Length: 257
Length: 73
Image 1 (spheres, rainbow over the protein chains, first blue to last red):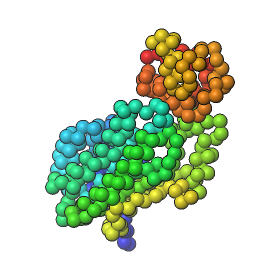
Image 2 (image 1 turned 60 degrees about the vertical axis):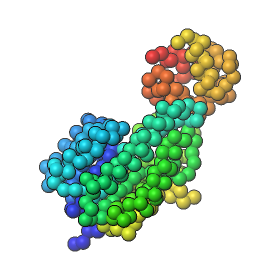
Image 3 (image 1 turned 60 degrees about the horizontal axis):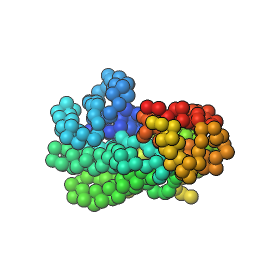
């Protein structure tokens, strides 16, 4: 049986793999047969994922790293090729810092911290992946960034986050053009709201039921991390081999209104 | 941090006039104490005092002094 989303000949780097969309993406890639380099700053989350994925035929390397440390990230990515016994065909940058902060409380430190991980780290990872020691030049490569509906439409108390996610849209389109001659496709997914503890906490601040308001903004209701992971895997697979520079709104209809 | 300094920081967070807050004021009677100010309080506690405060804690605040008591490093 043909599976257009098969990952058996793929080796993928996933950042932010310890939780949320990154974790769900890593698990789905694993089930579809990919070899994986999983990166996260959260050691316990990464250890728990490693245990979940052990005893598989896939080759998996987990590394705890702060994405702000560009040289260390580069070394881990290059050194891990040997352990994985293959070269990379895909990169997914899921690591991100959530930021709910009204304009009045935004500081330069906060803004720079959000931009460094959400956008700049993605640029650095793409640079490593597109380099000679990164992807397999003989095959098509695929980079997937995670943007957000907040990178496309406005919302209160989200300016730093929105700027970082809008930057990803610009980066996706520019790199799609620049890297096409290296056979590297670059796309991003812009998720709507995924129900998390953070969303529940914010809900408590409002007199109206914030969760209900958010749900009503999504014609298909709240999303799950797996909804995003499915789109990411499609963009990594050969099924999307003619797709580059695209922004996939996986948002239950949030931006359709 | 003195009480005066804490009140100044709160007035900045509430975007209210200098000298307009005092510890015994009821928060629900302060026009500027809206959802955006509550979000700003969470960020202020994190940035200035390294404290993560929850929505439940915010809900439990009744008077300005309830916030001032938590404004310790």
